[in-house]
Length: 257
Figure (cartoon, rainbow, N blue to C red):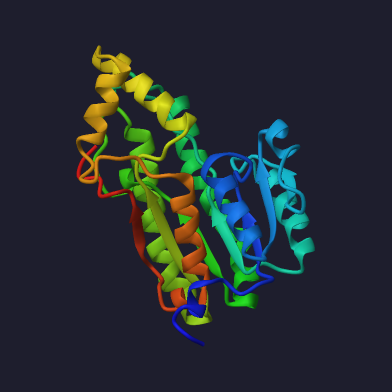
């Protein structure tokens, strides 16, 4: 196999993407389908699920609910097994000072962003052992940097990186690779809401907050959902066969948050 050939995933991969009906998850699902994979996604957005590209199957599921995750895997294994599981589901959580966040809001963010990834990994591990497959956990640059007024989000994403590195050590001897992708400021509705909330918290305009954020990125630009999808494809390709236990930033070099 040439180096160029090693950069493309083999056709026929069986792929599961959580929160795959919108944003980064949808970009990843589409990219795998275009590469010849069979793709199953879950999401809580039933309207978005109804307009998925033809051929992508789906389950309505919330990863914070164990029963939903059980049902998700019952339906996803109709692919005949799984080669790649993309643990993408997550929420932004609150924008507030630590003394302003209530227990329920904190717990909800952790339950989706970190416990949800555990629930998926728990069910995925036996299937990935069978296929000697790949688990991809979506974290964030907030999983390597401090993030004022976004502590539940940052804490959950640091937790995802720890989960990733631990599972890579645990599952590696059985042929399973585990990596985390750490997106930076990804263009789309979610970051727009985050910028809006942080601007309100700081008492400045949206434009000022956006420029302040970009000033902390050495390339002075946002990344696109397709940039994250490209990394997911590379890690699933033969060229990524010896990459495991890594927290890989796709962020245009975010230096601080």
